[in-house]
Image 1: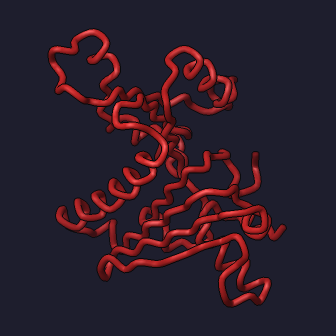
Image 2: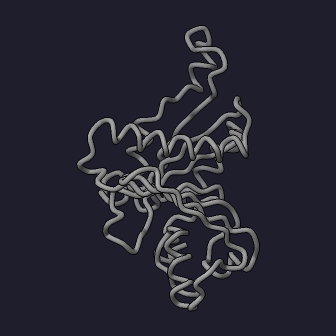
Length: 213
């Protein structure tokens, strides 16, 4: 398998085509692109069989890459529009895997003290958690609200515990129906810094973009 050194399925697909000389569709991979406007583009890559898995080194499933140009200098309206696109794509995946009331655990991977690895913990600080309110003060929350809990488990270097061990303990106790796991990703392009979001339904391997499993 080619050493891609990127977490993005879209980049891996393009690299595989370049290295293999295959210009058209790859067996086991379906892809499409959508231009929302001049600054917003969505690319969807779906890996449908083992041939697709072997070609780009990603497990079967859906990968949605949202490119948001000029996000660092975007106005409030542009940021809101980009957020809506990300939200809508996430909702589509959730609807395929969980019912409207299924409990969700949001996990922010990474080290909050290391800037390029701090995305996950910083996102956790912005999550509206509802599990404790529904459990203890249900009269103060709107009917039909989904149970959401959130955790930033830290990293092995500061906790001495592998992240999967921490999460297994939590999952075994609170039994969420689905995990949303957030992490910084590796890309081959400096232009993607602070401007690209990838959403997938295949799970995550921390460090996979630089072949650290």
